[in-house]
Image (cartoon, rainbow, N blue to C red; front, side, top):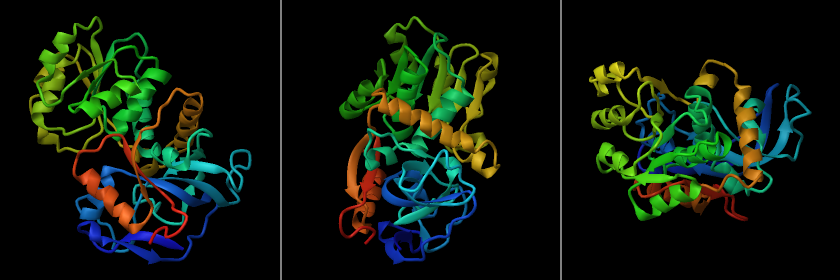
Length: 344
C-alpha cells in the first residue's frame, strides 16, 4: 500500500511517499480503507522532533484522525457494531496512528460509524479534538447546565471549535465566553455557539467585567499557552471553587503563584486524550463518545469545523503543515483522497 512517512525529523520536505505492506489485523482490530484525514498541531511537533511523547523512528507513517470504510475485521470485533463496508471515523494510539496511508489498523474501541450527513473529510476533522473536548467538559470538569458560565481560552482552535458545540448543544450551557482575536475567528466561534467573545491578546479581567455577566465563571478551559501570565489571569477571573481544565503542555514550575488558587479553592484538571489508551482504561468510551457526537451531528446540532481542505498527497500534506505552522488557521485542516495520485 502507499503511505506518507516521516523520513527523518525536520521541515516539511521530510514528508515522503513510501510503499509498505498492508498491516495485518489482530483479534480486536479493524482494517480501515482511509478516505480522509485531518492534521493536528501535535503532528508538526512529531515531524520536527520536538514531540513530548518520545522519539519517532524514521519511516514512521504520520497521522492521527481518519475517516474511511471498513475493509476487514478481526474475529473479536462485535458484529452487532461493525461490518465490512461500514463508513467509520476514529482516533488511533499515542504513537502516530499511521492514518496517512491507504489502510490502517485500529482497535474497534476507538472507532465509530461516522455521521451519515457528514462527508469523510468533515468526519475526519472530529476525532482527536472532539474526544479531547468531550473528556474535558463532560467527564473531567462535569460541566452542568445552570451552574455558571464557561470560559474557553482559544475558542477558535480545533478543540475549542468542538468544545463550544458540545457545551451548547449537548450540555445546554447558556453562557459561553470564547477568546478570539481576529475578525474571522470571532465570527467562527459566534457561529458555533459562543455567546460572548473577548481577546486573549488583552487582559482578561477588564473585558469580562465589561460583559456584565449575571453568572459566575465556574468553568474555564485553557487550550493555548500555559504561560505564567495567562494562568494568573485565569485564576483572577475564576469564581470561587471554579474548575479549570488544561489541555496544554507545560512544566510544573511554569507558574509558581498558586496561593490565590488555593484561597479561591480552585481545582485544576489536566486532559490528555490518550490517557485511557496508555493505561488500557475504559477504552470503549472513545467509541461511545464518537457515536454520541455522530448523532448530534446528524441531528443538525453540530456545525462542520473544517476551514481548509487539501488533497491527501505529499504536496497536500506539506501545504497543510505549512499553513498550520504559520499560526493563522482556525477550526481544522483536512485532506481528502483524490481520484488519482493519492499518497504520492
